[in-house]
Image (cartoon, rainbow, N blue to C red; front, top):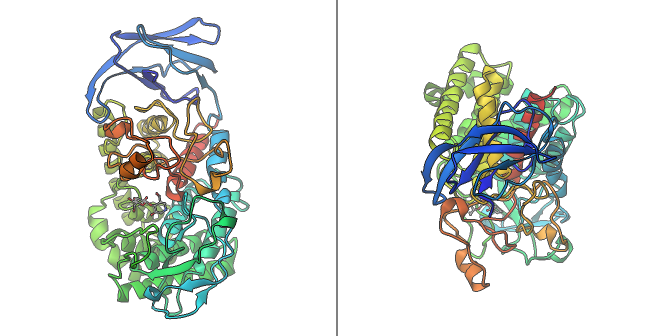
Length: 516
Ligand code: 9MR
């Protein structure tokens, strides 16, 4: 593996430009242009040992090199880096393709008669629940993760409505609307919301037309109702002028789901016996309550929804980590900042909380040798990286301070090659990228579709035992390298809605921020 790790797509002319060199004895580096001419020299900075990857790490910075072109980094005693460019519109195609992931995930099962599992409270009958996106490499549709992923992208639309099209005719909104139309179908008559549509056991690794197991509506949970309420309240605000009827229906449905949740605050979802599809189980619904109340407040300005926010607004503890689990409430904070209904005192509180977290994460970038704000690698770790990049992007948006834009760039560099695997984690982008993601829709393809973010290094390696049985092994135990580009590695190499959604946010944000 190349010991120089760098964003394999490259850099915007005006952005910060850094790389990592491991096991390098030299204390300086140079940059060669396409003709092999030396165009830059600089010192390597010793960052010490990184326990997460088991490497001695040095870093280099060539931010003042701004001339567009094709380059490589050379360090004495190391193989030259993979080539990279300096160019404007750096992420134009990548942003388009990470967005195109969503239409690709559109459900191909009819889902006109999904059987009620008794744990929904319905003993017989079926639900008409067509459309929506498949969650990941499986064919399930999960309310919580669908709502969360749509919410992340709506948060971008709210601050930069032009990022993916025009404010009033946006392909991004059109695609999200496709998911929301499905989400609507998940509400029960009493206002509660079903948890998921899946078969009882995971489908075989086949295309949808061959995945013919019965599809069920399973569970009715507080988490589903709250995330449903949150995203539809958010949508109601965003579509208010574009489609007033839809906006009103969305708000009514959101309010009913909220009321149901207040009466049923602890309907935690657990897979019923005989069901092994994804759980999205969580026994702490504080984040979901916050997200829903924040959206209802940001949309209506009604004090009734302000009251449940009080405790959290006193602390404003935005957090990243654990994939989706701890992040849902952050969208609520973003919406409070964006909405015109929220008084400026509340906005000031939220902004200071956002900046506080961004500063903590900046300190982490300083401390972690690879210059990233994450050093814990779990299932979907790439989404923790991207979720942190979102925090930096928003801190930059609301403060205008360059240090947060730099941090957004550096965190994104990790995703695209400046990591311990020297791999771009986005299919089809960079010199080396995943070739065998765990995705049923790729089963008949030689190459994966471009623009799919894989889960990434996962120190817990939940699938290691099953992989071993197929003769496949994780190459190392170091958490930052615990990844295998094998189709069976669902715990490190799957793709998923809530891992691509923050990529849509971050790449779209950077393209706008660096517009000439
Ligand atoms: O992203 C989820 C991760 O946080 C959990 O640890 C894991 C096991 O429960 O499930 C992940 O979500 C999967 C979901 O349950 C089903 N579709 C694929 C998702 C990504 O692997």
